[in-house]
Image 1 (cartoon, rainbow, N blue to C red):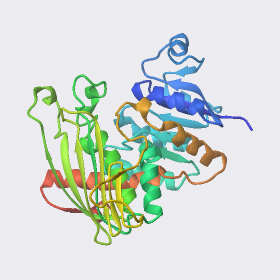
Image 2 (cartoon, rainbow, N blue to C red):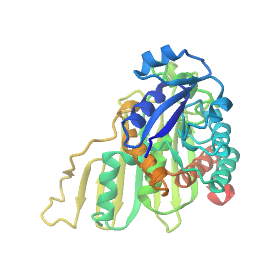
Image 3 (tube, one colour):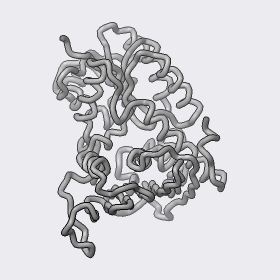
Image 4 (cartoon, rainbow, N blue to C red):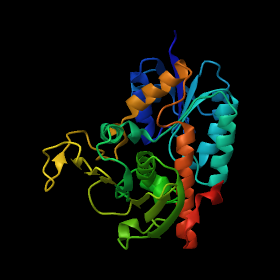
Length: 345
């Protein structure tokens, strides 16, 4: 069986991780790139180490019959239109987060994808991290019992020293603290709590540090989540902090609790209740895309296409539900009131 041919759209920071991950999979290879910067094939080969076909026109690229998969690493505002065009062209699509900066565009994407035969993966790759995998296994084995409270917080100072800042600071670029980056924490908590969100209350604010003054939106928010069965949770998205990167987990259940990479559980006799037991794993502790688990995610995506099975963990359906909660949270912060998810039906 021939390998799937992948076209990477946009040659920014995250494209490097996508190219490396797809080329390392068993079953796919990056053969094409598309960039409005119109680099020469020689420039592209020098940068990525392999010869690649280069397009500057997205529509012409989609017309290439040799391309099986389109990987969207383009600017956030372009994700909806480019994804819809790729679906219409019969391609499978990887969409970097956020899928869209507003609910109307996301809903159009959801409807088009549901009616298509295309497989779609969304860039919530942290669901494939060793840390997240470990937490899911603890829950599956019942070591925490039934969860009733959970926290997942994203702290990452994205200022002028960081490449993402030039677009992340804009309403039509980053969109909000959650859409820009904190969505990873929201997505993780929703999956871990295992129930749909029915209502959110969110507040936002902004640092007085001069380095964050160019943000066009409040780059710090906290959201309280109410789940369908009465569980509650909290997500902080803070991209205007002056501190090391920190991805925080705290889950509280009927048989124990988890704090980042530490656990206490009544299901393991002999543990000291006065001390946490450390679980050795690779923590989520970096905002650098090359440190993120794109390879296992891309391998799962390739397998889902070849085997004609649903994309696990980061398929469009689950990602769409996470984004619905984010749109509701951002609306809550704007309006100063709780927002029910039924308002985003």
